[in-house]
Length: 66
Image 1 (cartoon, one colour):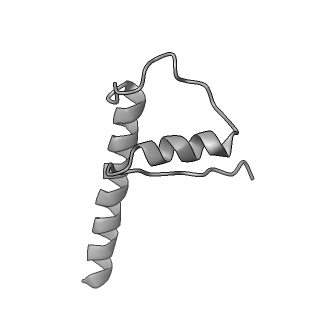
Image 2 (cartoon, rainbow, N blue to C red):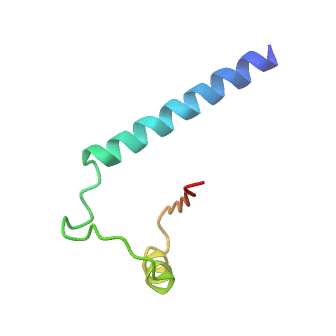
């Protein structure tokens, strides 16, 4: 029974994550201006923007091409 619960929980967690990500890509997040879509490799800028959102929920996702 424990294995079925874990599988169901993981399924709902992944489904929730997929819905959240889809909502963000479709345009659910209107707080960022549309002209602010450039990517930066400057870590100081990333740290500054990350620290500006103190008190908010923040998620930092790092993806590797390998």
